[in-house]
Image 1 (cartoon, rainbow, N blue to C red):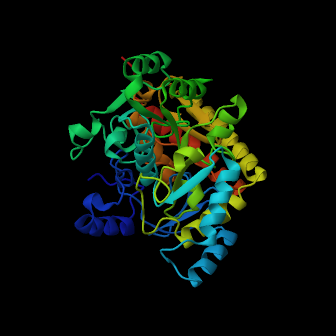
Image 2: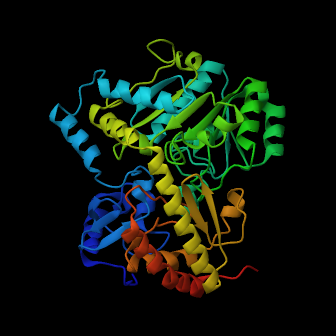
Image 3: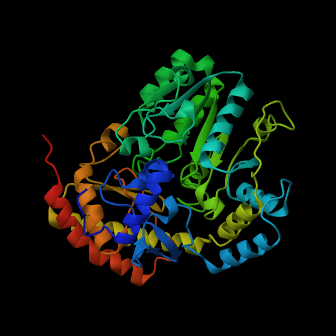
Length: 442
């Protein structure tokens, strides 16, 4: 393996140990750095906007645990709440007050009327899919290429994110029968949606979409697209499922729905949440209309359960995070994001690097290709080799970016002037590295 300046001996040694007991040495594929090359950094600790790796290097974090760390790492008030919760016990297998309070906070911020807790985003989407099929009595599900809804068999087809990073369209282990009832359409394509519902409308249980896709890079819906989806589903008796595992309480105080649905006057039938609402712990949820949610056991016949669902430590962390996710926090995220986007554009333009930057609320990503990027086909044109060079130059300068060209960048309330300046100082050299590696369009 070619040794890079960003390779570090402690992380290398840990990675070698990990590969002997964990497939690929990681517990989630994108962490392995396969898409950018080199050895993944093993992280020993984190505080505010900073990570400290196994070799003692401090890195400004623009991954934020892939979105959850809205307030920054180890926020003192969240830590205090979690420590108090742990002192009371870590799991009861019974209802708790933190679970109730977090549910009330989610209902207050979003259009959902009732909510059920689970432990991961995949569980949330899997459960929402089962509920939609149980409620409608139908089986067909519609999704969009490039939208990732966790590793649910029926939703993994053309799922962007990790699959795009590893250049595979699907995965062994998912039988054809699991995806035979899944229709995959191009994102932002109203004509394709209209045609699918015209042909299959009476068989479609639900349409799944990321409220604003962030798993093929950030590809926001075109104006009115989500409203069109909601209306199309309503007209055909299908449920509209808006996946806000990534965007929920991240894109805005009310998630991406606060940017479009709250303004345009429509609501999804079901929504899924994760990441920020867990405050860095494994917690997720799905919710929606009261009549749909009442189909869940024990009220209704659709079964769903989980031993650690609504875990008191995880729900305490999530509640403490959302209670501190104020308008001032979102204003800070917007300001820092704007500063960084402007600086990235300036650096890449000066270096002659073809690029486009797209945002969804406080989330954004950098595509190393011409824009705009409106669907997965366009996102797939991003120059992965140039991104790898950019990534490693930033890492060598002390900035930790997503190790994939198909992911969003996340800032936090803890990204202060010092952290931002480190990023700004790293950008010109990284842009030059990307320029050297950028391939030319034929």
